[in-house]
Image (tube, rainbow, N blue to C red; front, side):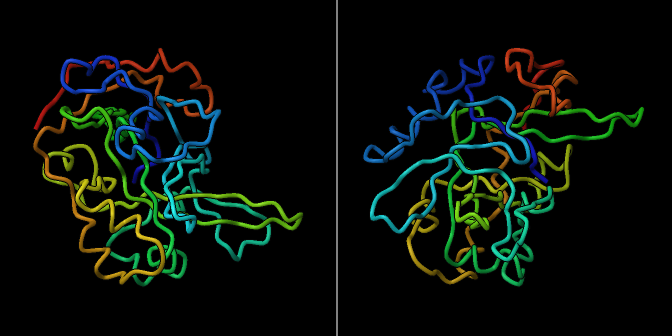
Length: 244
């Protein structure tokens, strides 16, 4: 699963990648020069379930726009607007047949710009160890996502998203049995195409990212505290970087 990620620069990674000190808003302008970006969003080093992240959905507006969505799909049929962590990820191996996700895959897709994501693994004492995973030669990269809009009884709208996950590559299999789909740039146009697309063709591009240039760091256990974790500066490695 991928239930925690970041879109703030990774300060201790800066020697490896161009644009390492750019904000997510600045990198989106590098990726998409004509994109419109909603003002006021604050990047974070720990975006968890139900937090806001800046995403690029395939709006039917004729232009790209980045806007904050809430992490975790609220199904359109929900009567109370509730979600749960299981709806924050969608598996590539069953998305085509999923009642919740299949229509979103066809029509509502998005990119989530990130600097890294966190995976958790039980250590020999049974305690959860967090690892920050990233790509060394890319300051930012894009995760594949799907999105939905829920209309509340009072007529207001809430936009939400889920991250696509696949089997891990051989490197990340050391820390988890799933990984988020990191979408190569050559597939961005297809993923952001407006309108309905063939779901089987879409799934074909949702492959485990090659392990070359990937790395992870064991992180201080402070990152595990998703409720109190508001001080990004305290999210630091507790050990050496591991590379593929």
